[in-house]
Image 1 (cartoon, rainbow, N blue to C red):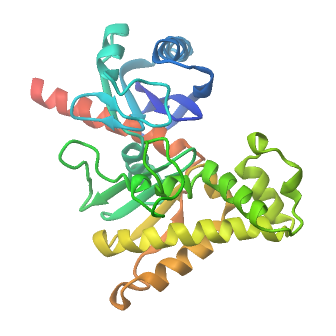
Image 2 (cartoon, one colour):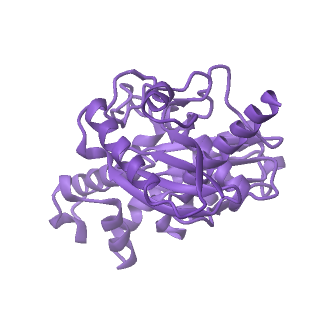
Length: 324
């Protein structure tokens, strides 16, 4: 049985899996991206993880390629360019590095494109030709599918709504600008909003005893579940900020659905209800009620792994056609 090795590079962790042609995830492992301060040490650890995963294959399995999804991944030239949350230089030739290290062909795409592909072939968007996938984790990614095709743009960088301005002269972003959407709607953005509210208000909160460098989005969610009003206000504000941007996106693309994926979606209705309400409020009347907001029905972070594999399978089939 032929399989591909799938890699989902993220700002917090890098996940790896073996995936077959039916998009079954056969085995997974991961490394902690934050442990590495430069690309040399990071890729050394990643190569080791790839070899370990390859060594766990069952009898009859054959690796035929590697698919990688990464922030800033550009399919056209196989590079990662300007990924703000990764320990890399401005430009890294990932495909060249992998093909120098391993015998298998390697294919790179943006992580959000991979996640959109994953949802399209095995998740909530199966059967849809027009949808948007928003990934909510360390940052905010976006994959747009129109007429069944992922929108790559002129140089492969389309869909960066996480780096559209949400608040003028707002929070400093890792990309070097201020006010980007992902500084408000992301795991780190949730924590920053919580501390801003605690600084501005005197109300009691379960979060006041947690130092800033130890606070996590899950802690804010857990507090919201315990009826902590400040924590609930954090999610209300975050949902409204997201909803405003989704309304703009729907106005431009008019998708059948917007699918939310990633760890932050564990907050469920605390996030989706205010986002959906605000989106509908901000839409043109003719567009209201036509776009669903849905949660991914794949396991957390599995969409990008399946999608990176799907991207590899698509390219391997194209290579086979060209060679025949």
